[in-house]
Image 1 (cartoon, rainbow, N blue to C red):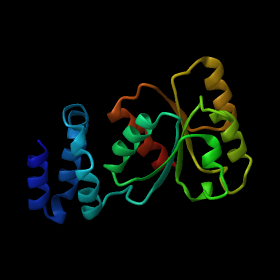
Image 2: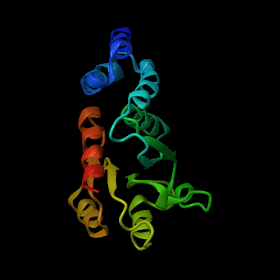
Image 3: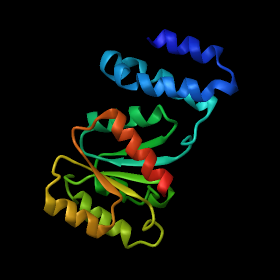
Length: 177
């Protein structure tokens, strides 16, 4: 499957890049389940032929390193630049500039400062208040969703995620601003 897509990409011209990209997206789910080692091949190819999200910066703040890797792999295919952070404190550290991101993906249940407290801090800062946020959570209770809505998040995605719908939600949030 990987060799078929690679061959298609090498034969493609700029006229049919959209067709090639749609085929890459269609194969995303099968690649993740059948051959997850193929994922690092595609970001370079995607960046070479371009796409609407190339260069968009996304911060993922989640305490699970495996989940951060999965999200980064999924988003990297579409040309997003993903910066992973294990907790709120590392994201809010002086070495990181939160205002340079286009989207925050935040787990609610983080060690130390939880995701909602971190978002409250970001939403009160004029430099970061307008940056959209998607919550990633296994705790999608009504109370949590209501609390998140009060902070001003763009939405939430329940874990475990579906790869196709996850990437589509990220695209929609970025397109809407």
